[in-house]
Length: 241
Image (tube, rainbow, N blue to C red; front, side):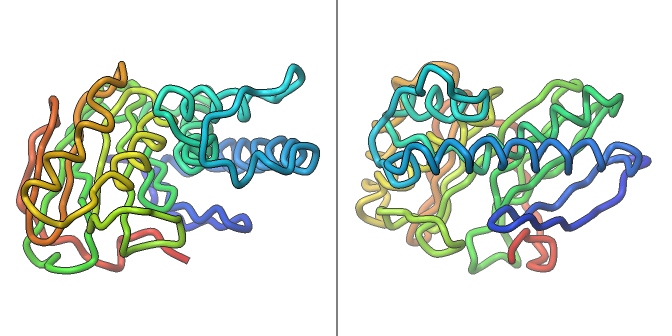
């Protein structure tokens, strides 16, 4: 994307790569800090919130970030923290758009919020065999799109399944993140049949565009996905601690 820079940013557990106009990065960083402040305060007062694996309702005075987490978790049938990375990414992207940015990407450890006016390739990184792997070619027309992934092999998040990588696409980034968690947990066996069965876990969730599962050398597609391209994914571009 023209006029953008790539910047790595870390705030405690939040590890992000921005591809964005430099003039709007401060708005994104401030939004992340504010969301984390609100969320951490809520967790201190509601200790079960952080570790719940089942949907929860937000308290009457819950901040917006908590309401978004609960809404996504409830829709997906998961605990609220299943959506935390995507929600932080979406919050940062929305702040930049409100600050006047026309397009930007926020990659929060594989949970990606993107708004672009020209085609952008988003690589799918499964941790092995990535000399010849996939990318999604997306053009959101300036609107926010969520491309969120989960893996049993990569990253610190808990996954109860056996997927190399699953990816869910939705306009609501929080929902995409929660559903990626659920989908990843549902890959019980890294076989072609196990991959296809896993889609049953999310196929009735409204507002999901599509999903992709990679497990044991098998690839499964569900719903409507952006065009897939064969690419080389450089590990140096993967957001990690």
